[in-house]
Length: 316
Ligand code: UD2
Image 1 (cartoon, rainbow, N blue to C red):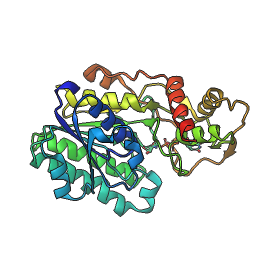
Image 2 (tube, rainbow, N blue to C red; image 1 turned 120 degrees about the vertical axis):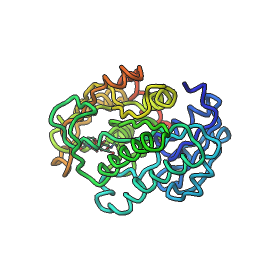
Image 3 (cartoon, rainbow, N blue to C red; image 1 turned 90 degrees about the vertical axis):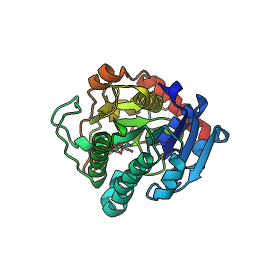
Image 4 (spheres, protein in one colour; image 1 turned 60 degrees about the vertical axis):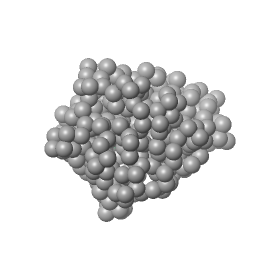
């Protein structure tokens, strides 16, 4: 597993999820290279471990940059992406350049320098509005945004590199990931980051719709662990795994818990009409990751929220 990794590249390693992967890898003594163009990632996310990594500022669409960052690596974690769903709706061509051509460049660059395995960040966005929950990996794919189409394309390319070129690839379809370093600053930021910031400021949150819509929220350290297992497990290559908890939480319940933990209980949310294109139900079927990888999320929502809120309080 992770102890067999000598050197790894994390694309998007200055971003929310990528920085946690880079921090864990480098903390385990893995020689870690971070490639990030800082378009949404931040140097501040590397605070505390930047002396343990090699940071390369560069664009994943540039083949030479990718090749030199990946040189000598046995593993690549591909977390770099154009991450905003609504922004992908506004700019499908720009987002496709990063999420499709950028991904292809990472795969091809990795292959050309002899990387053994690439673990890629896929997304539950590929399912769109599901017919039933929990959602199995085989469920119908109904992408409802350019971002979702691009993440589905990423999976096809990953599979192709596994089958056609014999470079091992594993795709992890993240559900709603949350935790420290998630940026709360845009209205389209993850709901937990927004609610945490609101609770800290003792302000009323906005809930879109009736608040009964639900999600599968997974804490970022569990996602890091899933990546490390996917990186080392001999049965992982060629597979796509849902990475969630299998537990559902409604947006109403989420606010209640955040408010209680942060001492903001009694602050009533404001309600607005549901966001256009919002999905009502999302919940992972987690059996496949459990049976093949032995991966199971460990951090309860309350524990994850406590750690997240503590971090946002530290920022204030
Ligand atoms: C998630 C992913 C997105 C994409 C999508 C696929 C995150 C941050 N986003 O979007 O990248 O993969 O899934 O379906 O993981 N909400 C409020 N008030 C707020 C903010 C949000 O009520 O201030 C609601 C929102 O309307 C939605 C729920 O909270 O019903 C979750 O919203 P989100 O933006 O955190 O994540 P989601 O699932 O829409």
